[in-house]
Length: 117
Image (cartoon, rainbow, N blue to C red; front, side):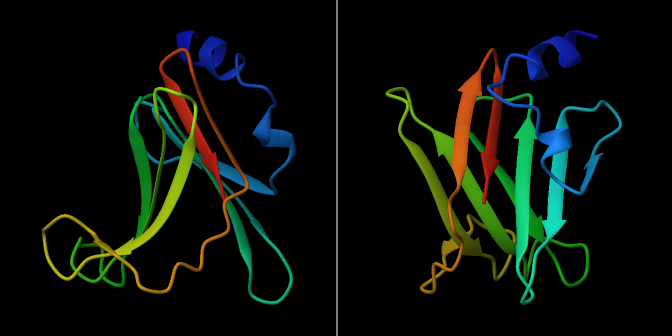
């Protein structure tokens, strides 16, 4: 119930704005939202009980090497960031030279961060 109270402190309820959503962990600390738009475009929302950066990685084999990663954060001044990154190994993800993610919104409140792209 504490998590539900924290989620409700966000400006909007994404569960009514996306076609699908699910928690990605058994403790329900990281939630993924998505909608399949036209022309092979997906809209994602990631929401985590965390401050600082949060990320979503898509892997061809379930491992970190070869993953495509969206990472975002809200800084102490409220500025928001989204970066397209990738990995070649178990190292810090590299900045993708083709930044093809479109930032929509982000916010951080009450120990929770969420980013929509």
